[in-house]
Image (cartoon, rainbow, N blue to C red; front, side):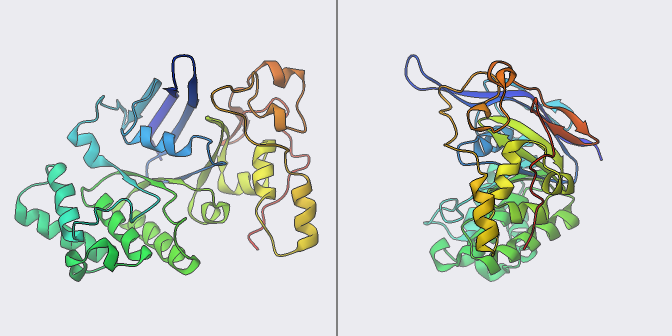
Length: 324
């Protein structure tokens, strides 16, 4: 596969007053291969959603480059770029206009993308409603007349309506119950196969990520600290933060769960307006050394396709992933 999207040294800083800067993204470099689903995981506040919104052009990066299909992302993004890159939001109800029917919502979106004539817009709207399992009858429904799963299907229908190549899915199933979550995941996978889509799947649910993603990137305080194929990351995590995330996944054995949680790193993530020097994880890391406190580790190759940003990356203490 070839890279559809490449990010080089991406930063995003927000000014909070005269002397305070929030470093939401702090130098991210990675590629998303054409046709794959890349998972992006990390604690709340790690910068996952900011990264996704930079990729679709909702937020302008402070520095670095975003290359889409080998070309720099337009600034500001033009209509051609917006047709090829779409976003699925976490809250489907908040992403839909409550005063518009689903059919009107789809038509407005396609008109903004300069899709074509009114008849072609109506035909495409019916087509994507069928593709997402809703059917043409849902064109006359308002968001409040639909369930959470149906609303998320409508949001996905809007995202695929302009024939995109790349979709950022920002926590697309976190607001849904377990059975509906499985249906939406299966829909996304079916659409990927049928349409050749490339997904960035942002989630805090490691079980879902393990099920749908071929590769996974782990973010901590605005940086990617580990990037690996799914099997390697879940069964042989190298970064202590990744290991801590896996240990935090609950399992139905109280004794084992207590032992796992006792190994969790202490404290909370540092304030992004005043990040620690060196490795940003060192205040919580059991393997931190003087080198970690003074020098930020680069994301380097640890094995074939496996990258980690840690001076003391090791399998020691790693907890193998269990889907049970």
